[in-house]
Image (tube, rainbow, N blue to C red; front, side, top):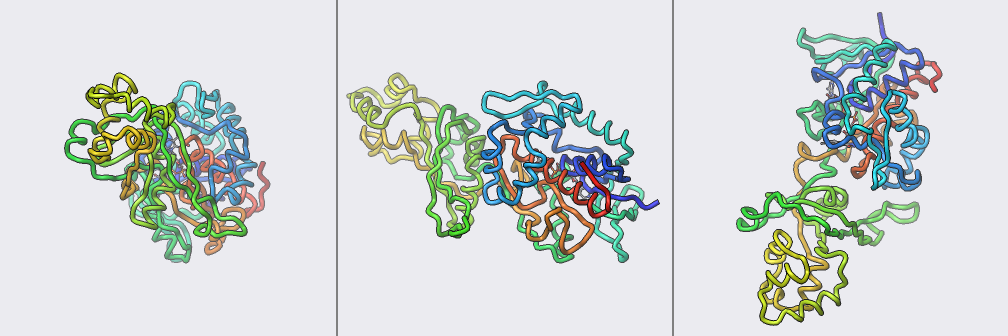
Length: 421
Ligand SMILES: Cc1cc2nc3c(=O)[nH]c(=O)nc-3n(C[C@H](O)[C@H](O)[C@H](O)COP(=O)(O)OP(=O)(O)OC[C@H]3O[C@@H](n4cnc5c(N)ncnc54)[C@H](O)[C@@H]3O)c2cc1C
């Protein structure tokens, strides 16, 4: 019998769409290429499963930058408060961490996913694993490659929640891009977001310090504000952003949370100019003039021991100063103080998308109507990371996936003439 809705992709976006549609009484099938559902969601659980963020809603929505306006209505309908209520309803209590990030009490994804799949099945949602969507047949019916061969699965509507293309071995590999382009959907290239960056270090630095954390630092970078009604993006002067935190000096360059926070701006700068610049403050709590004064008192003592004993700078931080500064500058207290406060680092390429936490690019909102239905293919909806938005880590990724999943699910209900809550 023909089903009401075929959801393709059993990640958070697809499962949330299935939840909304099944709650409205629709007969829903969920298909996924992998042997089990929610593999990337489970991986997110390894890092504690940062579900959402507890900051004021206006600030929360602003994290989506250029896409804040377009995502706002969906985030207002299903945002941080609804994500917490939804998890609570599944028996998973959440708490707000010191940084405002929201986690399940046990920091795990598996109990939440288990409860969720149990509830979906109880509502009649059928899950079909090892079903790789391979497009449509000549009569417009979705077809899937399965271990038993090709199967067609007719449904009155279809919802794609295929993810981006990071960590492709978990299922989302971006193979949907040419398929949607072939039916006239203008997909923006998928690119690395929340990723590390490449910069060739000397063999000496790599051999001694690759993998070392740079803790208690601040990173500065230039960011162009989102375009406004009156100014295009390229006409707006970039603003210097400074964040405290930590990152890691890796074999290939820099990675870690502070670099991820800067990654959209750094990636865009590399795309524009071939290089991105950022500045590390190795001692954010110290004043530059005070530092210069302290360094001037070194006398004949060795720089390394003076930096360690008087300023608490050692290991990878001092190695970075030697790596990036000319010898003459190291001997000048005023210039060295300035460099400690603002050590310039050039970055030359984002790490490959397969390694990134998330993807930028995807199906642009112009290709969708207000219910997230493809204009080029009425009756087919899209949700989650495959849409063209990006956000930093902090729970913004999962919240937007759940939110657009719910919105597309409601859209499919409306298209099929059923009311949804
Ligand atoms: C290491 C890591 C940690 C993360 N931690 C967090 C975090 O703490 N908080 C946060 O907010 N976000 C986090 N994220 C990001 C978050 O997990 C993703 O943004 C989110 O899972 C995307 O949801 P989605 O449903 O859009 O896509 P996905 O979760 O990628 O699901 C898409 C599904 O579609 C299936 N699929 C793809 N193509 C086909 C096809 N042709 N046929 C059938 N099925 C197909 C895939 O198998 C997959 O199951 C993390 C990501 C990574 C990599």
